[in-house]
Image 1: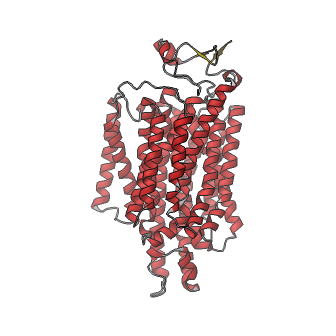
Image 2 (image 1 turned 30 degrees about the vertical axis):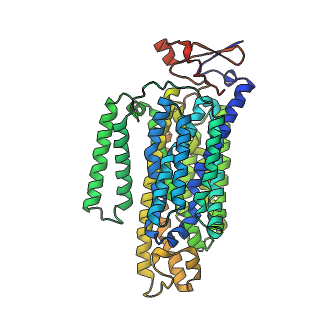
Image 3 (image 1 turned 90 degrees about the vertical axis):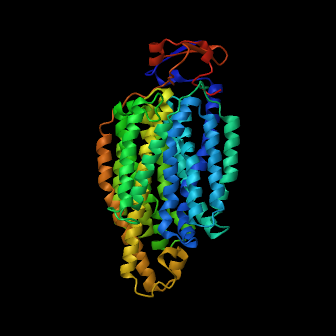
Length: 553
């Protein structure tokens, strides 16, 4: 039997036999284990964080517990993406999980805030590979038209683990101890490694002398670090006109300019500049950056707000986040199913971003006396918008480039989203911490802080304070955080406008590769003819690469 496939073929033509489909499902199951590992770790500290920083006397360093992880993972995103395209993804995948486990061990043993932040940074070095390689591996085995439902489920797993993370964090904090938020990663990571070793069966890649863009990697890391440190320290720890902040700004600009020059000449650039000649890539990348600012800026400190302002304990604060994650789960899976069924997708990120903007406006109106069910409805609206937009933006990027660049393109898009997350967490955290300190200094009468210094406040301490002092702290937390939500609305409006100009290209129904035989025999003699623009251009038809099949064996 012979079937001819091309980019615009009907979805049914891309069907493979049940054996190939089972192979894809096995690959997908392995990725879900790793997605669970990575996404749990992003959220498990949200409810535990107030207690952790109180015990370690480090409220003024609280934002670094989140920022260190995001910064490290951001720096590594393009590295994993490019190396995966050059040498294959399976070995990198296992290595990333191993680094993540090492970071968990360091964090679990941390005696103070410094070592806690170091552990989170090491986790980030591995965590950057877990998400990006999972997304790229799906592109190795599933065509774009069918990929929507798989990526929707990946978003759903993120949503489910985001519910479980805060709940586990709260349960550990109030029970066996918050350090188990680190220790649990060890058996889960070991399971992920075993799954990757025995389940992942990916197309083989030519390992012959890959030329690594070491200079580009170093300059990108330097520019990323400078940017995050500037936004974190500027105006809070150090004045904007201080010598250190000015030096960081100069280093960031110089490193970014040098990076662009290096990428123009590098044989295998870590972030090829030709990506930015694609209209959809530019529009979705900017929109993704803004989404990162809004999502991480708004959500990183909501669990702390819920504990301090509503009086909820860590576990209850986790439960209060369920409406947002449930809405994200439903909209993520639903949007993926709709894309695979109808092939239309442009309206989803536009509608989702509008909903996020509305949710931010509503969150900015919160008060300490607001009914909990109303607050939860605001969070659900935020989740609905995020679920409609996040995975679809990645799908649009992947559909714009050949499979040989899908890892690099996906990583570059995710890099800017993570830069947004870094900036969002850092700026919101800095504004929140600075404003909170200012408000408490202004409002707290001398000697009223009987529970100790502000740096050592925990939710339990606040609940035990005299009513007058407790109300001052509650109002301080509320008045310090809620205005920040409104500051992000203009950015979201810009994202909506940009997404209106996205070109809705037909979703590919085949997996195109740079070097393929003209016909590939699979599954007991059935022959599938695959078209590729680069195949026609290069006329490379060597049959010794028959292992580079677009299915999982």
